[in-house]
Amino acid sequence: MKTLLMIQSSLFIDAGQSSQLAHAFCQRWSEAHPDGTVLHRDLASEPLPHLDAEAFAGFGLDVAERSPAQQAAVTRSDQLIAELRQADAVVVALPMYNFTVPSTFKAWMDHVAWAGVTFRYTETGPEGLLDPKPLYVCCARGGKYSGTDNDTQTRLIEMFFGMLGFQELHFTYAEGLALGEQAAAAALDQAHGRIARLPLAA
Image (cartoon, rainbow, N blue to C red; front, side, top):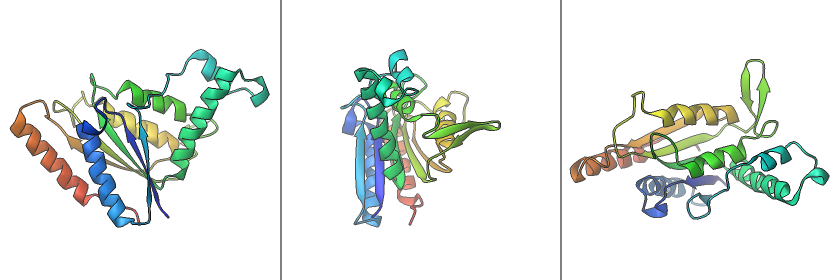
């Protein structure tokens, strides 16, 4: 039985355009995998705390040496990493806030990037320790940034998930959503059309 992990990061939860695009992908994936399971991780309704020095230090300690707060941070990261390991594919609903990813999503990244667990350092750079699986990223943006120097998200996602071991990445962009109703409607229609054509793993 296949499992899809959906990660939402829009402040507007299901009302966010990136979330709606990701839900459209989930529906298509579920139709292709009727016996599959979709795991939901909503970073707006259940935000993760940002890592602090105490929590970070706890990752390098044995269980008996950790404070209760450190153990809680490790347990939280273990759960998030287990979701990634369980998933056969991952879809991320990713709006752009102030030229970058939402802070809630950055917190998620910090919790799952664990040296020796999800990646390791080598002489040629970091090497992913997660099994390869496809990643689908649904990007919603008020302006138009794809292919420009202001698109800081795409390269960040490529680098970060590549570090974890992801090799197959698919981006869907809905851009210009703040440029008027006509522009927004056209962008969303184009994005939904791409979602309908995205390749799905067997």
